[in-house]
Length: 493
Image (cartoon, rainbow, N blue to C red):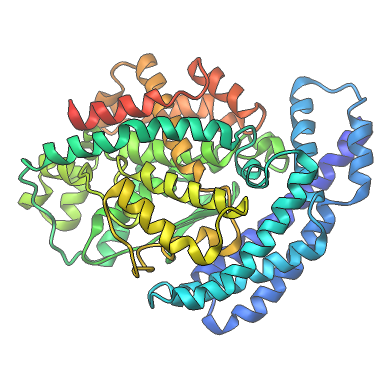
């Protein structure tokens, strides 16, 4: 096992350096002074090249070939499979393109932070066209090596085994029933006498409430922390998780669920198999599986009545025992359905429409069927068709609202709705095993749900292919019917 052990040492070195990169990225999005961006961008570009050189060292290819002939157990072979995949993904793209894309992405993202609130699509487009150009170049190179379409070659980075042929079938199914479901739910909720909280809600009180909820959900504060950023995220490495959220004095509803959502990501990372923490097999299986954990926390549990009952006292302690904070009203607030412009603020029923819109745009953009300058027009057409909303001239609430495309993260968006489907399927399995799980959650005991996740998802890391992971956990491959059943049951029954 000499070659395999040498590969393990190399991957451990990559993991340790990735730790530094992750914390630097977190700092750039939370703490770094605005005037430091140019210097930080150059430093990160050099770091990216260094990581690329380490990950693409030609000797790794020889070690992979030699290790494949060694006597390895099943777990080691899974690790070797993931090492090979990681190496192949890294070696496809030339170093100069890696550096150019890093610089263009950093420049575009930093400028976006001011362009977004200023509705400055024209200014954004100048930088964004460079990002698109370089992303298409990357996609073309990956496509020529993999035999996949340009877009599928990027999608494969985030969702190994998934492709547009499968996605188009899945999303076509969703589009066949989602608009009608939205209409039925909105019509039903017209009769609700929901009292909306008016605020202001002290940022300090919101922080205290968020920390209480994180502790109840099992976040390990000895190996992580939570801060503020313009776009909530969970980063770092399993041993050092950096979670962020954002607060609004006029609305505690979204910030609290943002905390629950990101805690789902964090707990997945904190519970990945420790014996493989520095190896590819010890990482999250895919972005869709990662998103399934945050949506399991937020949607399957967090917005359900049992969980709201379990934290009701904490909410009342923070904001007062008034009419808007009575449990029946809170349930209505957290399950309100209304088509809106902003994806991250969308309810779970309308959310898939936001994802499908972005998927269809980025698919055509990378495959050369759409140009960057034409995105706002197509965006508006799809928003009107899917959610009945007009975004003409409203770039802040339209194409500029997300951070993902600024650094060329094309192929990422489908993971959100795939995650919702995986989460619904997983919780369905939990309920089959523990029929009284909601009663336990209502009493503040989340152990049944979390033990199932730990055993079936968290501790498995990337030891199994995505489809095998889900089949082993739930008894079948990804099935969109579970999402439809969940939404129908929660909102119409």
